[in-house]
Amino acid sequence: MAKKVAIVVGSLRKGSFSRLVAKTCVELAPDSLSFEFIDIGKVSLYNQDQDTDNPPASWKELRDAIRPLDAVLFFTPEYNRGMPGMLKNAIDIASRPYGKSAWDGKPCAVVSVSPGAMGAFGANHHLRQSLVFLNMPAMPQPEAYVGNAAKMFDEGGKMTNDATREFLKKFMATYAVWVARHTPQ
Ligand code: FNR
Image (cartoon, rainbow, N blue to C red):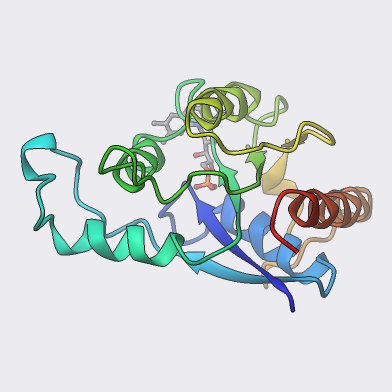
């Protein structure tokens, strides 16, 4: 049976390049993976006072959406050399209550995306810092820094850059092996 992967995109922008790269990765992925896009846009800001037995509904929805899935794939833009605040907020919310993190042990990988040349390197590694603490085996190689993203898609949102398509296809094949290695068979 296919391993179920949560796709978490750190942008709410309608034309988000990060989301377009995520959709391209889904298209190029091997059959051993299935995907669910997780909506983090409606999740309210974390406030520890509200993290009781009856937390805000949007937090419960996020935690419940991630918990049953096998693995996670993060797509992050870069805001001021780090991951966007809304992505960090979602990560924090699903990491609680203490000892019951929805992320715990799930294999993951990070794809960072930017219209700039550096491919959101800073956001990629900012995010990886949290993944260590969350006990999520993060695929080390290949690293994925997708730069110049504004020039890679046609008007329908299809990735037109053959070299990047080829890279993402190999990336997803390696990720599928990584997921298989780090999930119960
Ligand atoms: C940016 N952008 C940006 N880009 C980058 O490569 N490094 C950076 O540090 C920043 N910083 C930054 C801060 C803020 C507040 C905004 C709004 C934008 C530009 C960013 O990469 C661009 O808006 C992307 O299009 C955002 O990703 P999505 O929405 O296309 O996925």
